[in-house]
Image (cartoon, rainbow, N blue to C red; front, top):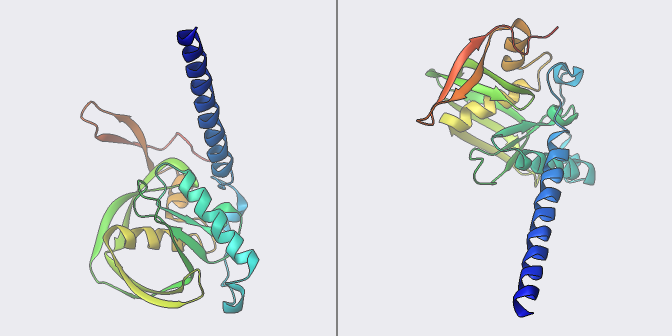
Length: 212
């Protein structure tokens, strides 16, 4: 009898764990579905600064919370801009390490200084799934922005963070970001497969995901 009860309890626990995992999966899926992709017209719109007095109001703070939740729900996302969830505001969220949900917010960011040295790298974008492009960026940049508490900041960023920030700033301009432009032209890289060594192999593909 005791063994039978133990088995029943074990099955109940397993069932609850599965249900919990499914709820979390649905929750994340619903958040990720909010990301505007490919030819959504808002990805082409110009974004605008937020008045300093509006930073601490409930509308802006709710937008920041939502952006943080959406970015955290993605597996590999390192940055997310407001237009990617339908807001024409100059705000982006930064998460340099997807394994650590340490997310920072940048409001009304402007590059005020950049290095002469540049670097090339392969970039993707949450709004253009499975699309990768070789992009040249400034190695170091200094930006001026407001944080989520409304404090004005000036900070220098290097390497990976510099690249992410430059990418996110492109979303604020009229027209597509660099990755989006490459997708429209049919000139990009797609992830082909992961070989046994765990290295991602890429291939140039001018057909897959081409805009019709």
